[in-house]
Image (cartoon, rainbow, N blue to C red; front, side, top):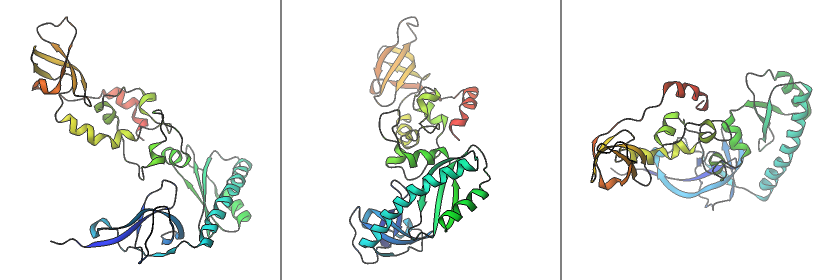
Length: 292
């Protein structure tokens, strides 16, 4: 069966936002070019992050909209002008939030390309009655105002920063979507269930736990877990430590329970009885807020 293919380009509208597919409409684009396209939010100018390529029809959400045009100098000038307007709007909104004594934190401001509306992104602990704030902002900017409450992960993605690993946030570098992350993943990857060591600057479980999980799951299939009974060249024993990435194990031999565990490598042992990784329920309940 021959698969139907379609030519697409990928466009981003924020620095590390989601990539959206568009029909290039006969135009050839280079990475970093700007393109004017029609989205569900109206006409927008975005950066090409994926050059012309053919993909299976099954990978496309139809109907696939065509690029209106490669960005003209005046389009690029307008996009830069909007960036300056966003800075001014941010400062004005901060003042208005203070005037209305609202418990909310302004995170970012985004102008629609055609200036038909302005989006203000904010975080808050609960629901915020911002109706009077919207009226106030509308009287200043004379356009449609939209306030959008976001989560702490979205805030970290927008703001950027350095993770505890010493590298820029994954969400701000290359992740386009957030995936659910669980305490079970941290346990399976042999990490300490210390909140300060497994949570990011956003206060939620680190995103890397999710995108590295597939590798760990593949290694789980061939590596005995702590508590497993194995046979070594020195005799039978129980695994007390397991390094999935290096394949090195620590085994407490049955014949010498009072002696230190011996070090063995995966290919030199035979699994007699494996076990399962368990997460203490009380500990899981205590750390549940890191998943949300």
